Image (cartoon, rainbow, N blue to C red; front, top):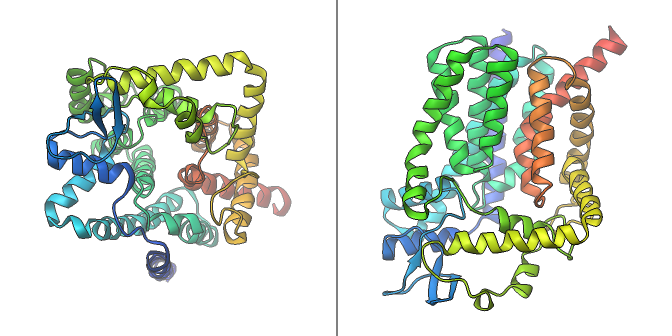
Length: 413
């Protein structure tokens, strides 16, 4: 009886979730492939090089669509998985005019699967059916989560991969099978190829569960080797092309975008464009152009921070606060819409309190607390976009449910 109730309940959530996403697609959907995604795919189709920067002369290159005969520089700025996915979709359907529609359909499917994955994760950790469905409903209907599936952005893919990562981690902790370990490692690798900084969170997970928690060194080495095996072709490509062992090279740009005299929590690309126009930098436009450009940005960012480190430390704390709770100076459209900001603040407060309480006790929730704080402290070094909080939403909901259980136990025995 209870199982039938749960099955019907999750089916209703998925149907309503689909309807909300269809409404979002109708109202807000991107209509064409734009920005760097269109540039990188079209440039590859024309020149055979995945790149955004087109050479203008020996000391000047800009991100733009290439023309016949133009030289496109290979990119190392962005992790590759999302634009590889777009390219595969383009190959399969061979109709670039409708590629945005295909991408959004795929993202809608991934978003619905993510709802089910989140339900499965919380079902592994929580026994109270009401709390399970409250948390799953919040995740499914959270306005930003509904909206992003209608946009050309890697965030929907990232959430899908993260939930697979957590799901197979919980499955492996429950049933230590080689299959669960392989899937855990596989989705770890895909996350690294989606967001390069995830390699830090992967090793945090490895450190916590395979050394500190379980001392399972055999599984540790297997997971690392399998993960490296999957990401190694792209690392090899970067080593051959750029003579560097890395996934991306964007630290300098992101540091300068998030730490400059404009003091915007969301970052200020305008500061870079106005103060460091590319045609004035005298950087040779060879295959190392993006690396040299990023090193230049890093040098300038460090100068700015060192010249007034106390002010930028205070600004860092402001970004931490904005990530944990909300950005009171946000310029993003509908950020302060009550349907977004009210649940965001409530979830933020509950999860913050939970993380502080649970980080002291050795458990899966201690790991989630470490993950939560590490994410916040790392990204606050750079800048905080609204969608960054979305990748923490599943973690915040899991922590919040545990806090509710603690309070129930304390006040209602």
